[in-house]
Image 1 (tube, one colour):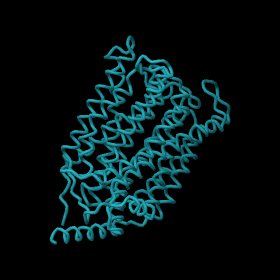
Image 2: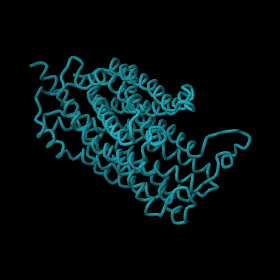
Image 3: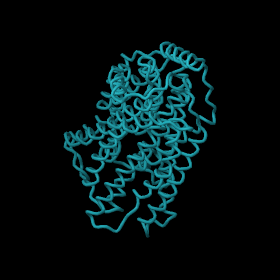
Image 4: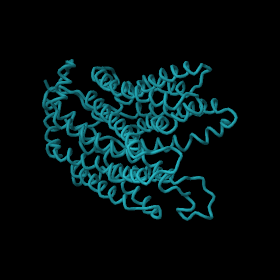
Length: 466
């Protein structure tokens, strides 16, 4: 029973789902802390503790959503209904997260805990089923890689959209005179866009892959199957290692340019005749986002030609070598720093569509091996692991700065500067090396996956004829 080919419109629709999620993920990562401290009025330490607590809880909540989605049955399928049901609550809670009530400092902190925790739970409630949808839109490995590529392109595009709109919106809503109101109205606009994107994702996508047999999976058996799934463990390690690599590099960038390079963009890039407000950090990060998109686009043709595993190993080895080379640039090599940022980010961009596509293959492998399909659980546990990767990488960034004696807003010692340089070169390269070591043991080649898919198709066909 050959599955229908996924149309271009459907791929765009699937991509819009991650554009919606990524708009607010980027808002949370880039702006929420400064909103809490400068607009909302709670301390940075209190906000930081809240982020840690809520992220741990949110990571543990992901598998709960995955189990729930696996057991959902509706005329819309298992995973698409969540895009329909949760889109408006997502937008509403996002707005309340950026609302500033007239409470005492303690009341504001409680409000922040409640709204941010709810926001992260709603985020998981729509994003985990969305990610799992990839596993049932097609059973063809190359189509899944293409869908993953569309997803990641739209994810980075959604991030750029949010970053590009937020300051003009704040200005339009008179942010200098009414900062609290400006933030609220700006987020209302972004929330409306996100809800529209989720609805389009629901309307333009289709679930095709059905389980080999209809069974009410036992949760204990599902978890047991997952824990015995060797390819999943290997991909888990590779994914966490790659995310630690990314988060240490991202977390160290602002410190690198402020305390090591410490010169203006006009001086360093030769824009002496141009009045620009762009900092080197901004240029560096924007170039990285754009290069990520290039890497995502390259992932499908590369993996179709040489395979997912070889593509993963190749780009991670290149990222390792480029990261080590990055260490040898000094303050006068800003242009080379930007060039290497582009090259490293292209390599990083290739990884994410491969990871999600390989998780879909693992869901097929699990069903073939056990006779039970648990797509939601596999994708939710993978989402959880990625959040742990970001959390570990973010914590490591702070620990490393402390180890090297970093002091905020003062001239840094040579030892601290050396540590900051290592955070953009040798230290993240440890993550890429680990990811290569993990993926070297990954057993699911394209040939094996194709064979598994063919057997599953035959089982579904036999079931349909019986």
